[in-house]
Structures are given as C-alpha cells and as structure tokens.
Amino acid sequence: MTEVSRGAGPPEVGPLRRWVLGARPRTLAAAVVPVAVGTAVGRLGAPGGIVWWRAACAAVVALGVQVATNYANDYSDGVRGTDEGRVGPLRLTSSGLARPSQVRMAALIAFGVSGAAGLALAASVGWWLLAVGLACFLAGWLYTGGPKPYGYLGLGELFVLVFFGLVATAGSAYVQHGRLGWLALAASVPVGLLAVALLEANNLRDVAGDAGAGKRTLAVRLGPARARWLYLGVVAVGLGSVGLAGWQHPPALVALAAVPLAWRPCRTVASGAEGRALLPVLADTGRLQLALGVLLMAGILA
Image 1: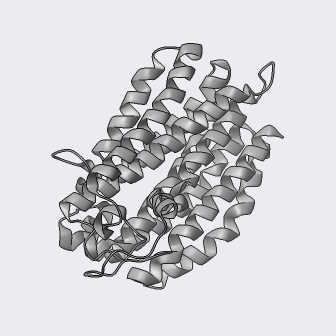
Image 2: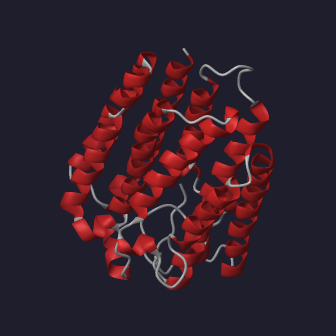
Image 3: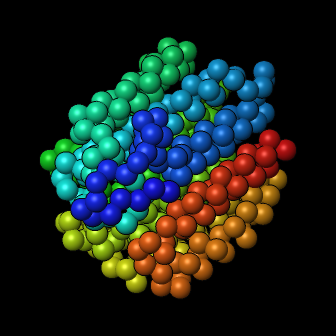
C-alpha cells in the first residue's frame, strides 16, 4: 500500500489506481458481508428463491454508501488538516493527488449511484425505503463532515454498528420478500460488530495522529491501552454473537470456523504494536469479517 510521508510530494500513482486506493478497498468487506448474509436470510423459507436483481441493487447501495463515506471522509479530513502526518494508507486530498473539489465530487457520484439503486428497490418494495437511504447518506457525510462531525465525538462505532450491521443486514433480508424475522436481527449482530472492529483497527492505528489533530475518536478518548482492549473485546463478542444466529438457525454456527483468523490481528494488537506496525491489522480484520460472512451465509442457506 502506498504511503505518504509528511512534507513529501504526491507519490507516483496512476490516475485510476489513485481513485481505487482512495475508495479504501480493504474496508469494502463491511459493505459486502451484510448484503450477502441478509440476502441469505431473506431467501430462507421464502417461495421463489433469491430475487437476484434486488440482491444486486442492495449490494450497489451498500458499496456505494461505503465508497462515498470513504471519499467524504478523505475530503473532510483533508480540508481540516486532520490527515497531515497520518501513518495509514494513501489519502487523496492530503497527499495532493486530487483536488478537494474532485474528491468531494467522487463522494457525491458514489452517493448518486447508491441512490439510483435504492430508488429501484423503493419502487419495488416500498417508498419508505427512501427515508432509510437518506439516513444512510446523511450518516455517511456527517461522519467527518459538517460543523460537528460525530466521528470526532467518538460516535463512529455506533454509526457502523447500526448502518453496516442492523440496517444493511436486516434491510437486505427485507427487500427479498418483504419479511423481517428474528434471524435477520440476530445475524446483524456479528456482522455489525466485526465492521466495528474494522473501524477500531483503523482508529487504533491513527490514535496518535488523530489526537494531535483534535479528532476525538473513541480510541483517542479511551487512550491506546484501553482502545486495544476495545478492539479485542469487539472481536471476541462479535465472534461469540454468532450464537445468536445459531440459536435461531443452528447450521449458522458453522461461521465459528472463522475464529482462527482472529488470532493474528488480535495478537498484533495485544502485543502493543503502534502506528505502522498496526497496518496489517486492518487487512486481517477484513479477511476475518469476509470469512465469517461467507460461512454465516452458507450456514443460513444450509
């Protein structure tokens, strides 16, 4: 992953690759997993099987919101100067690879693509879904944007748990056949908590830079030592909460086969690693969430 040192000029990155990196592909499991799991739940016991075009639209909505939020975060943190001297992966605005107006436009385009797919779902399932979509867009933009970004207040974890856990998982189940049961809610818990672990891996890595820039994430508020315990606790509870889905549908317990993938990122965090040494944790956590999602989907469909 290309890095940018403070005071260095823009790195040599191709025009397409810069936008791919700016979309933060390592975070996209947080969008794919809830749709896959929710679609499997929506299929369970329903006549006619999976409505594939609705599943595809739900995936576009989730991925669009995730990418748009990433670009919006890049733009807002960049113009605030929060990303100066950060140790994480490349950011378009702070690195000078793109003008702030270009990054803002990329966020709006991603929101627009997501909105178009959401409009198709709303026309088929119910117009009230537009209100849910609008809430997702506002939450994505206001995470680090607006006069009082809630990501700077330590509330980012709550946003991720609600929108990339409950809303995305249960919503993907509902748009299949217009039904919402306990299994959809139960499955949203491990999905949402491992998405929170992704965010916490990012925030723990950046805790020193965020503190210096006045970005009061939950990791900054807790301090590095307690933030490590937060990451470890979220992963542990997230994996343990697979039991909720298993209680509703026992084959879902196969998702616990993903547990060994938690060893490496948890060991790195528990070792006291800081800054760049925490860079692999985000990718490892993404792989853990993806594996759990695939196994949970398979168990639900079994």
